[in-house]
Length: 429
Image (cartoon, rainbow, N blue to C red):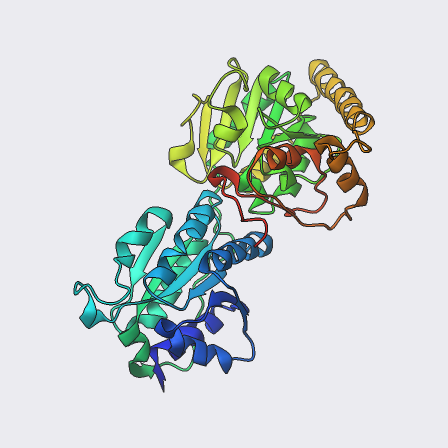
């Protein structure tokens, strides 16, 4: 056992969770944590001028790394309220941000104290869960729980409030601990019966389309999706903002669908007879909730980790509550003896011809020389000069919405956008 302050115990718990980078703004409310971070050689503190910026940085780190991003707000009250916009953004992107903020000393609550705000209530609408720690002894437990919840299906941001007196108090703690991370093989799979039903629908398709969404991008699950697409000879369209769910350049990658997508991918979604929706809600940016942007006669097989998203916007022929890449693997195994139909081959070849022509026209129509700069010319130059390992960040606004399908994404994940929250300033963080 070792005697530590609550702040030291919190930093030690971050170390147990293999945290290497902490974003934040120094303040007196969490000084015990900053003192401990100063002495911690295995953890980098990356300071910011505003807590919202730090939250966006933690969000971006989480999306790029696939692990949790950590933001530490040094001050309770206004320091905590500055976190809200960034956490709402992370919630919209299902990004596992672990946000830690100082909080008012326990004995000062409900006394209209300096910088008092009800932080427990403040964060609940924009996080998966919010905790306010009640004693120094419980700090390691609550940190472990915060990481567990943030990383559990379906991922998202969490908030941990640490009162000043809890951080300053001392207690005896174990010398080591175990991180709270989902174990390997924990992704839920589809049942044998439901996979057989989905396979039968796909086997009978003549104009199949796969829609790959954030569930594919965030899990890095493009390989099983492409393997299934090749087996089915089915074009893959992506939901807006997730154009990097599938690497650019694959002949079956049609790009982004819907009102914010390209005409080729949009036509496929509107003419498909079977749609396999993998890790997508088929929501606002993909469809505007309208059959103007998706086939009204298609049999939709929707695979989602969130059961409340299945059939929410469009009736489905089959809903599968499971991990999308896992289901893609299961379907590939179930369809291993699939025989190719002539109609499917014609559908795929017609799409490929159209896609090639569209990409050629996109380049030939680009106005590179006009001033003021035209979006088409800007996008053409970026396509030409950006290296294949480029990471692209975009903000909200019409130009950025156009850019999501006008740029090439070679190495997922490499496109980072505000998605459905649509805020300005995210890309600069």
